[in-house]
Image 1 (tube, helix red, strand yellow):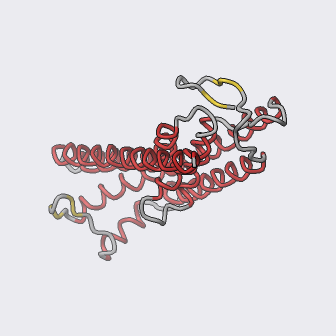
Image 2: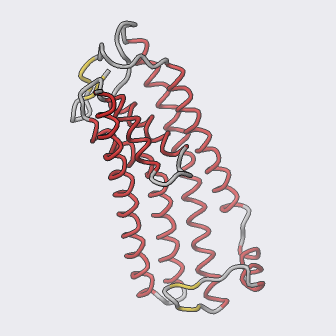
Length: 239
């Protein structure tokens, strides 16, 4: 089943690849496992790491905070680190829970789609291909330019539907970056809150602006390379 440009289903695709439903279960399982891992990490930062532990790290020199070549005192480092750890912990926790909930919802929606789609037609859709490509990007994230591979997979599959290979590749690359983007937002909040606490609000604004640039770059990196991969995947599928 394919989706139109506005996200609505356009009906089953008889020429689409007949991917078994187990593929969606595998995809959902990988997403859920990633969510559980982030939830565990976030819980550790939020409920295990406390002020005393951070203070010990600062005093021993294991924790050093230098922002734009500005050395902070131990007291300032303690406050900044505490805020960053707290906000990062909540970011990991909420991102992990969100991924688990997404995985559950994805399985439910895809199972319903398979039940409603005749066996002679493809149950694949624009959005499911994008999710599959995003998961492939995540699995291969240890490789340089992994969004190209994930976008290529999404573009290859989407070629059988509407032919919107570039856009599905871009979407897959962006989706793969969403957890990173969410975490960067929380880290940014933590940095600003910590610097504001030690009376460095101006430096906090500059840092937040730099982090905003990092957010935009990350989103463009995923979507851009994913689009490139989608284009290549579509061309390969047409041969």
